[in-house]
Length: 378
Image (cartoon, rainbow, N blue to C red; front, side, top):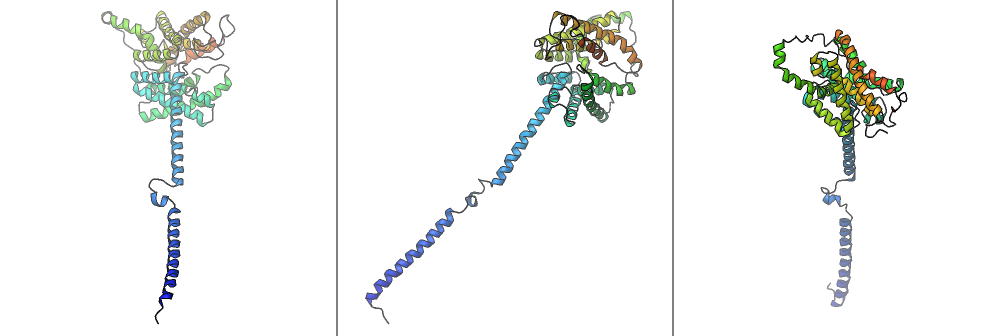
């Protein structure tokens, strides 16, 4: 049956309203679902999840920590090299290492290895952290590396093993001597550990005596000999690290000058006095030229300049300690030579220990409260 026109119009109106309502619900649902959708679902490549960001931050912190640790280890190692000659300075220690590399690159590597190993050992067993940073547990290890390079096995792996074992032993011995001694321990640890091995290996037994030269040969080489004597104090400075090089000695003097010019005067003056004492004692000129009479004297003179308040009396003690160290070296050298070993820095240790005890015994001689250098001691 056909609908009448009067009914069609109301039906169309109702249908249109229903359609509009239904369309509005669909549109609202679509808009809500689109805008409430996580942004990462559409732009994941530009904004990583929060967990990945946290991982990146953690890695960055770890890398920063590793970098800081490596820098601290390097600074402690170079400072240890400076502390061999009383320089509490990473910059001076770096300059010393460069100077050693000029005279003997292999020895420089061994010295750095010894200093690093000794410092790492001290940190591993829980010794004073500030002393580790100041190089006080590493300088004996540096000297062990120098001695191992010159007197130790020529086979590199064995030499490296000797260096690491010996350097580690010096740290432990240093900890013991800190309790036993009422004064700085100088290089006693180095001497004890190094001589334990050297006296067994007897490296100097195979060294042939230098043959005597005739008068004609001496006259022909006279000018060269004069220059050798002039350079002998610098060679004596380099022999502190068991290097035979005037150029290395000059570099070390420059390193000392960076830290304290007056301490550089003590070092060069002490080495010069030691060489002169050797000549006065009638020592073999070859030993004098190669700086063997100068290095203990240089160390003793620097020790006085470092630990005593600067005064005329301290300068006199510095010169006296240099002369006494050379004299004691002259007495100990043939004794240890007969055993096929060098006497290392035993003369310096003995003389400086005696000088240290003069505090308050002689008017004008006073230990500095915070030892540093002649310029800063008060």
